[in-house]
Length: 355
Ligand code: IPM
Ligand code: MN
Image (cartoon, rainbow, N blue to C red):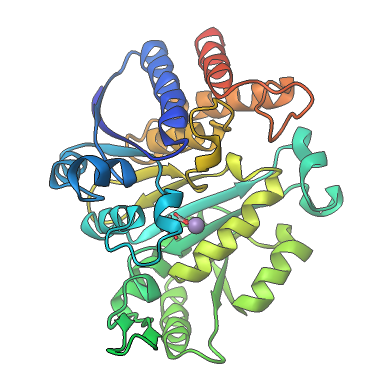
């Protein structure tokens, strides 16, 4: 089959890690006889520098006319350290999520036995974790209006807004996922304080009634943050609003041993986007040291979810597993004998073609 993929490398380590994912996609293309056309677009600080916009129309059109988007990372310290900057790289990512209607961000957290010693958690706690965070991605405090400053500049405000419809579709997706997994959905909220959370609870209960094989429980976000550390293997599917999902997924990701291991898929109304959950790590940009595995596993999710090619996805995951077992890894996972970003990418591509 033939597919068009929009490649958006973005900022910092984005270009290096996406280059490895491209190698992997090319290996899969060769092995399985597909044709995958990459078309590159500008996003983030890189796009601001050359066009003034963090998400140029041309890039958005490219995404809309592609079968999938493979995304690196965005963010640049020159904007982080300038709170007055009018245009920020992150606006490109947020605009892309909104314009493509990507309301569901799926972040699977798994652990690998040979990396157990690298987890900040004890091996008996970290072992066997297999959970998915389903993060709502186009609502909540990230997009709620009003947002801004009072006229005298001395007060600032953000608004957390959710409609029933937004909650229904994300909870439904979480229940569908759970029905194919261990049948458990945990809704994480702050219903003891927030009106939006109470709407989430009410709506989630109604949706769950339609899923006989799914059991649903509710947890306040502060408790959830603690339970993810104390007893992560008791979670199956966690569904939560935008900002809670952002925070909990960074927390949960390091259980695997490194933030550089976790892929994600953002799906919704138009083209889906596949991206690692980590950021642009500007300090490492151009050094060929960043872990490309999260982006490579995001490409595996692309094969599975956008192209329905499960064997191809399995081949990528198996090859990733092999480099993990060989210890052929970047410094975050093998500080004694670190391999470079491109070496790890090449090795995984080689294994896909060999096996
Ligand atoms: C993520 C990132 C983004 C977010 C930033 C870069 C805007 O942290 O994808 O998790 O907060 O959603
Ligand atoms: Mn985040």
